[in-house]
Length: 212
Image (cartoon, rainbow, N blue to C red; front, side, top):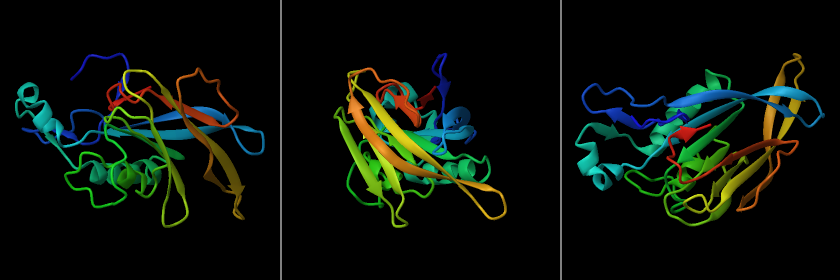
């Protein structure tokens, strides 16, 4: 394990002997945001991270066959479902050490699978990295939901900014449903202020298993 004062999440690295995950697969954090009615409310944000299976080759000498790496998309599917349906996460953010890749969901063994991860049910934001190029995409799923994929430049040259509009709908049974809508997505090397919507930033080329 790396020594870090930051929280670490990675959903697809397992110990080769025990089969157990090396890091926490996800974290749930609570933030206070202002909703579409101008009211403050608590929002649960689920954060997970994945790395490509290729690290087994790139870092073979360092890893020394001590870990196994599961497919990125399968791990994200598993833990997004847990975060949304068991932990009650309103938003799921995926920190992925991967590029956007081809626009296909058939990504077994793929190095760049950002599009496929964005298409996973329940995922709201994907922060990509790895390819050292700036990019942003709005990925539309079959059900009409739109996911923001943001990929800032490497080595801290840019900060990826994702703005989400939080719509709260009151149901007939007095329960509330939280809907996530696109507000703005950008990659910028400028400093940014917190907006009245939920505002998340992340440096893409710190380890993608790190979250704050």
